[in-house]
Image 1 (tube, rainbow, N blue to C red):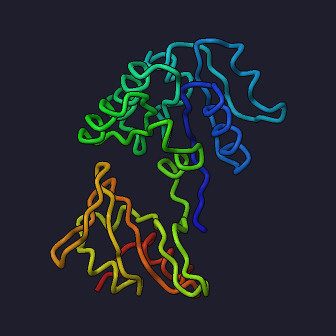
Image 2 (image 1 turned 45 degrees about the vertical axis):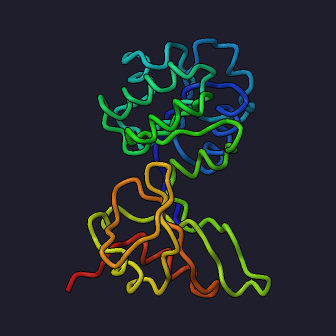
Length: 225
């Protein structure tokens, strides 16, 4: 499983934000948690080694104090939709953070922002672990295994080197079959002419014994000829 150490900023230290921050910190990542109420940081475990920043989540000074300029990912999981989406846009558009996800309570609004290219998470349908999945390349995440355990369907992280390349090239390099792609919140079946786009979530079928080879091929990109 490919997990490398990065800096991540979390907006909101409620139950979800505290859980994500704890889990990321336990994995060894550099974590900064932002919340308007300093008392919210009491939800963090006593051994939390990350940074806590009190302030408005979309304020640039607050975000910069949290290390947004060097952040690999940003998650807005405060209790307010407007705050979350505004902060997510600032992180993406002002600071160029590569991976941004926002929790949105209003599903109709969430669908609009998905179309704008900002991944959103509906609280009724997702868990803290799935939010982490949006932010971190974590190898292959099993979604289904046949009863014998021989074949797996998994969401597999795709390295940036694959962007713009044909899905069929990805299949040939990995030995896996791409079952479908989630793009801007919608699922699509790839054709022979489909290419990998930034933000795609690729769901692939492969032999369980071949998992490490599939993860490696998906992560490293196409071989130069």
